[in-house]
Length: 207
Image (cartoon, rainbow, N blue to C red; front, side):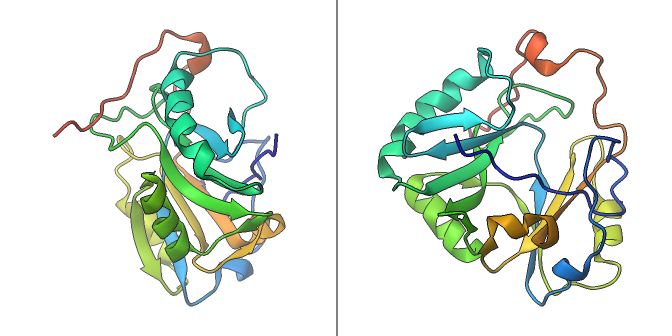
């Protein structure tokens, strides 16, 4: 099982806890082509040639993973060794309630042999595999107030935060410098972990 790397918090992220890692500098994100996507409130999940697994070390059964396992069964045979699709499984409601998701798996990274692929080829690969990507909030050059402006525009009742990353490819080992996340304050609003609660499914857009 290849565990997906950790995404460090941006320095302005109010949702960082004492257990989280925070970027010490934004120098690695000061590039001409930056992609910012919505951070979905779900379970980080990897699909690979041999199946699927969650990032969490907690491997206990949970009904929210049933749909994902069936979905991955149609994707895995199309993947080569060393190829991984990383995404979010928002089937179970955690802290943010979604009422019109396009899918219970939303992809945000395509990795081949420990290299995070560029964003445009990633979207093309998702389309080939029938995977919906996470929403893109903006794309363009880095500027000094970019993250503050994006944070101000968030609907904190409906959005957990955002993730900024290079549009170009980069080694997975460079994630702490090439990616950063902003998470809203007070994100976890329940004392009971979602895996220990009754499954409350988020809504799917069936239009």
